Each structure stands twice: as structure tokens, then as C-alpha cells.
Image: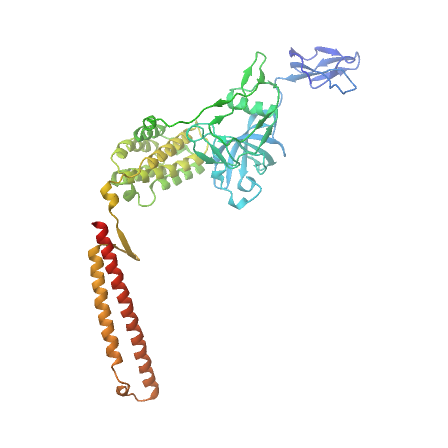
Length: 511
């Protein structure tokens, strides 16, 4: 179908004769004279008829400036951006319905049971979606008064575009994984399988992602197919954009950019230091004094969870006294929604980290990652401050954890310690302690042997009791004592030999 050049018309303008053109949308036929007139103020478009049609008259239609926006309907395929991920659902905003972008804001929900068709009870929402992901989904129902219900439980539905924690656009490598081309890190997602895109769908998604306002006319030469690439070293952009004077989008052939990740001799020097990352994290907390206090109720609960993850357990033992107390105070500031106090405490972290041990840095990094995940689940709020905090915390935490491997000297690596555990009691085994244990076992074995010999030496005639039952009970007791002390003697002998051999082994290793 060929669309001729558009022009502006107003109601009452003559568009042609009914014998020459057909009236489409925004046009009508006057029966008294057989002319076609415009009924709207807008752009006139002339659509050529199909080649196999018996009526070869072109169709004229007028598209008004105030045309109603498209509305999601049951069964519509939509493109949405995830704003918040919770344990049982994910919230998103619909950006496109089919090939058309929406003007109003439509909130939608992807429930846990609607993520995939199989193993519904094993679905982890945080491993399926992240805030900022662009997903392709099906309108399952109109939901409630506040949001639509979407489903990604089909092969061609799921995440289309996602951004890694390093800020790069990730490449799908399987149906459940995407990889960052910058760092090579793999993240879990519910990825859309081999997706055949129509031209209009690809164009509308690109417009929403790359342009500040929508474009009215979309044209291209062919449709595009999205494939998964096993190699993370090749990036295939979907299309290249060309904007013409008449706001027409042309989609040309894709270009392939090949690159390889190589290891440099000075790779460590290119990585930001812990001090720099912690200072960037502190700068993220430079917020208005009432920012935390104005958070909605559900986000305040998430903030309390982040405070718990940051300071729970033996934080003083793991992170050290000063750093641990700072983390405790920072978590209390979050719980009380004291934004200025949290900013002040966050600015102390770079200095405290520099004086911490490797073990404390590693524990600190793990707590930052856990708390950062909580901030990440809060979704898009305000100008994206919470997501900036989440990204900085996770990046810093991973850097601290990866670079906090304790160094072991040659002398320390040669030392081997053995511990014996008896419930809550732990005893370090040394050669001296092993010899002492062997001596105690030897003495205990001798005593057990002497006792069993003494019991056996008692004659049966000396056992005199009032009746036969008492005599039988006494003989049974003597037999039990003999068995117990014989067993003790044997165990003491094995223990003595074992501890003696262990002591000799420890002595030889020390030498």
C-alpha cells in the first residue's frame, strides 16, 4: 500500500469526487453533489488500493491532531518498562500497545504465576526481571482499577533489553541469561526467545528508547529477527536510524561491530579504587533532607529491610569496631528516615574502609551487596535516586569482595593446625597435647585392665544372697562390668596408639 504525500486540510475541504476516490477515516461523501469532504482538521493521506482489488479507487483519510491514544486491550501484545520488582510480582509501565506508543500512563503487574508456563512455584522474580528492563508481554486481563495483569508465559515473551550493573546493554546468551559486554558478567533474566519483530514493533521500541518524542510515520525496508549470540564479544545493534524531514523513520541494514576483550598489563590500574567507589556512593546520598521521610509506605518498608541487611548479625565482629558502629548508625538513620544523618555517615565510609582489614572489607562488601539489592527492588522513584544508590552499593560491594582476598605469607602457609571439636568445645591439637592424651589413655587402659581382673577374681562361692533371684542379678551385674571394662581397655589401647602416631606426624611436619 502506497501512501502519498500528506497535506493539511480543514473541515469542508473538497478531497475529490466519489467516482475518483473513496472516503476513509475523517472524510464523508456529500450525497447531493457526489464530492468527498474532510470532516476533521488534520493531515490528508491518500492510500492506493490493493492490486487484487476490483475497486481501484484510492482511499482518502484525514488523521486529526487530537486523535485518541491507543488503549491496552485483552490479548494485546505490549512493550513495558519494569519499575519495581517484589517477591511475588513486578510492576511496570506500558510504553507501546502493538506498533503504537501510548500517551497516557498505564500501570501493569506481572505476577509470579504469569512469568512462565512451567515450574511456576520455582519462579524467582528477582532472577526474572530487574527495574529498568524492557519486556514484551501479553495483556492477560484488565486487572483491577489500578493496573493491568500481564503475562510472559510464552516463548516469544520476556525481557527484550536490559542494562547491567556496569551500565552496559546486555546481550542475551540463553533463555534465562544475559551477559554484559563490558564486564562479561552474566545475570539471570526471563529472556524472550527467537523473537520475530514486525517493522512497526521494532520501530516503536527504538523510538521510545532513543527519541524524546514520538514520530508519526514509520517505514522500513524489511522486518528484523532477534537472535541469541553465544559470543559476548560481538554486538549487533538492531537497526540504524535515519530521521528525514517529514519525520519518517527509515531502518537500514544492521552493522556489525566486532571487538575483543583483551587483558592489559595495567588492568588493575584501570579499575576504580575502593575509595573512589565509596565516595561515589556517599555522593548518591546527597539528597533533600526530607527525601526518606516522603517515601511511600511500601518503600519505607524496603528501606527498613535494607537497614537490616546492612547491620544484622555480628557486624562489629565481622567489620571491626569503628566500621561496624558506623554501619549500625547508618541503618538506624535509614529506619528513622534521617536523610542528612545518613549522608554524613556515608561520607565517613571511605576513611574507615582504608583502615580496615581484608576480612572486614569482604564482610562490608557482602553487606553492601545485600542492602543494594533492597534498594534495587524499590524501583523507579523520583528522579531515579534509589536506583543510583542501588547501583553504587552493588558495584562497590562486588569490588570490595573481589579485592579483599587475604594474603598469606610463606611461613603461614606451611603451618597446619588441627582442631578437635566436642560440641561447643574446640581444642587445638599439638604434639605435646597428643603425647599427653596418649599417656592418659595408657593409664586409663591399665586401670581398666586391673579392674576387670579384680572382678574376675571374685569366686562364685563368695556370692551369698537370700534367694536365687538376687544371686542371678549379682552374676548379671558382674558380667556387665567385665564387658564394660574390657571394652574400655581396648578403646584406651587404640586411643593411645592413635594419639602417639598423630603426635609423631605433627612433629615431623613441624620439622
